[in-house]
Image (tube, rainbow, N blue to C red; front, side, top):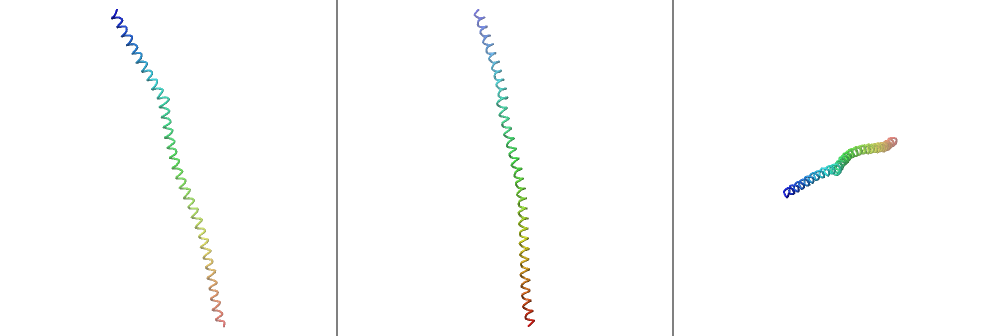
Length: 119
């Protein structure tokens, strides 16, 4: 009888421990699934979104730099053309004034020399 009781208690303890192990592995599997599904997956997706956002921002900054450089080149070309046309007008006006002044000087010297000849 004593032997049977000892065997029965050993068997019950063994089954309880086995049940505990099975329950523990089930709980661990469930927790692992929950972690992978709800926590790790959301973290992974958050990190992926963050990386994607950074890449898009970097690409947009590069395109904006290229566009800004192109706009600056266009503006510089327009400024240079405007400045060149203004300088061309000023040069033409200066040359015209010089012609007028030199023509007057020539007329004045010729007038003086003709008056001397006429005397």
